[in-house]
Image 1: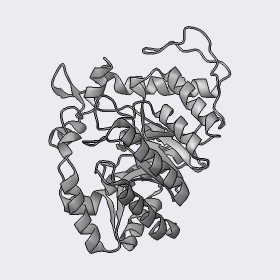
Image 2: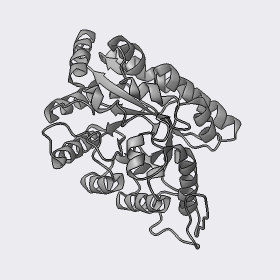
Image 3: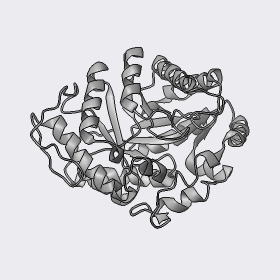
Image 4: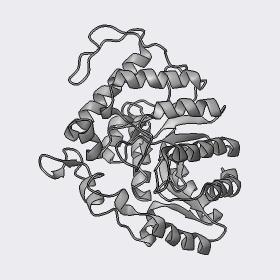
Length: 350
């Protein structure tokens, strides 16, 4: 099992944008010092929920401040971008970092962001699939030409620069539903499982991916990534107490609201292909502490946390993407302590 850290770049009250960037860049440097395998950065637009709109700019900067850790996206929202730009910028980061880029991609879901770019959320899946074809075409061919529904090159083009990793940087697709997992497993594209899905659902997703990929002839090793909220304390009692304290610090209304919900503005209902998400976001994402303790979060003392991670490893996941508290205003020194304790007490077991 490999371990990576997740960085939302959430801006809390009283923070400047530079404060947010300095905070997470320090944690990225610390992750390398502690022996984490990688980091992944989240893309968001138009609000404080995440203030890193261009992940490749941030990763290029992180590449200059690190030397070994993998640098990943988690995720690039492909429908909001021209895929040619994504292929170019990602390749440039791969070269600058010495071949350390991991590209996590997804179709997105936040209607507020899609409206800001003037893009129909109902087109997200089709735009995503076409973008993926363009990126792979540019990365794997000497020349490439495309004339699709949403994107076209107009003529044959060559990607300059080409990525350093061959045939291309690792790609992970955000997916957890059985139908979506199956689609990408048939192509041998590994998944990045949703942190808001229960243990049962992500375990099922890994099993579906492995079975489908093998049936489709993809027999090589593939890194499957699972994202989780992670917290380890010296004792179970302390972990429980801290969980309650963390919940009191978390303003859910800033994250789970009508801006987050994938709503079609023409109908006021869930956009096509997003029916699953509507209630989850409009109801405020409210779940009990017991539900989070038992079914969502990796949390507890070292023994319990190690057991939870083994469950995910045995299901077929090979990389745990750890969110150590991206939606809580935790002072830098406290966050560093949380990461150090995890690296000391948990990671050696793997």
